[in-house]
Length: 226
Ligand SMILES: [Zn+2]
Image (tube, rainbow, N blue to C red; front, top):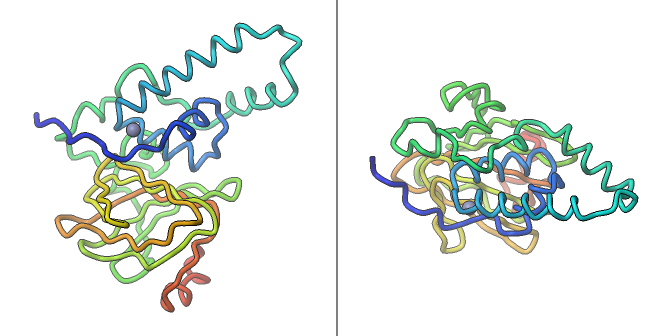
């Protein structure tokens, strides 16, 4: 079994801490849970935060628990599948790099199976998508981009998380492959291009409509609803 190349792009401490605290919306939590299912190092970090959080809660006098903290705890208890990932043990999928499974377990629950179960809809030349989550104004969708194709130039009204699941893409001089996650905010204006070696399948999470710079993007935006 050939080992996976190490993941080069991680979500960063803030997002992992927010995930552990149950403070992320469903779509973002899904992206972080899926990244962690592929990334032992972020899983370790999350487990450390979780232990730290438990210790902090244990140290608090009962009366210090604010309404907000209670609400956050309850929200976390009600949180859907992505929050339920095991932080202590790698998932089966993470241990099977040579398997043909493309979608890690947290995503398969949303997609109804692996990529062969995905009901792709055309989004543009060489690009298909399948929306998975739309909650609290944040959307998660799978994107499938033909080899060498580019997603239209776009900026962001808010932030965007893109997690690669198959193939690769390049953006702003960086290459992103399976497990890598790109965090882009409103200051980033980029034109991701899929690698030529394979189709690129990724999970894209956006918290505001994208701002398309190309005429075709602007033309299509009202119709495709992104
Ligand atoms: Zn990571």
